Image 1 (tube, one colour):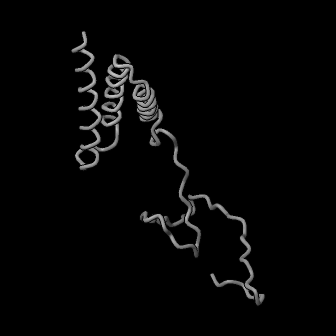
Image 2 (image 1 turned 180 degrees about the vertical axis):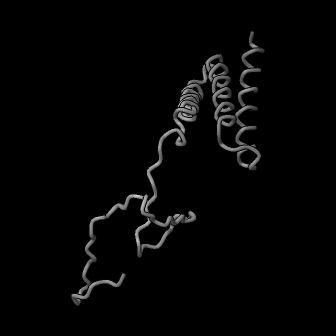
Image 3 (image 1 turned 180 degrees about the horizontal axis):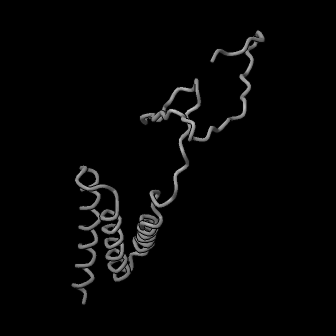
Length: 133
């Protein structure tokens, strides 16, 4: 039985280190595969650490397990940002676009509703002049 606990420890080390290497080298994205390898590796380390009475390692790997588990839950499709409707991006006249997105301009026709925006007051400069648009 002791051999099983040792194998668990080495397997955990291999899972966590190979996942870290793969993400660090750009072979794998830090997504579900990475988090799953961390979760499995943490469980194996918890088993090995408990067998050896290495309580600091057990506590660290319980935290490692919880972090990976929460990350995996948050990656589920119903929790992904794509499932949540995004706020529309608004580009105000005279304000530089810093989003790097391509602007789409639509020409208003008689069949399209016209939406009016409230007037915005431009701040005055120290000498009382208004800023140019």
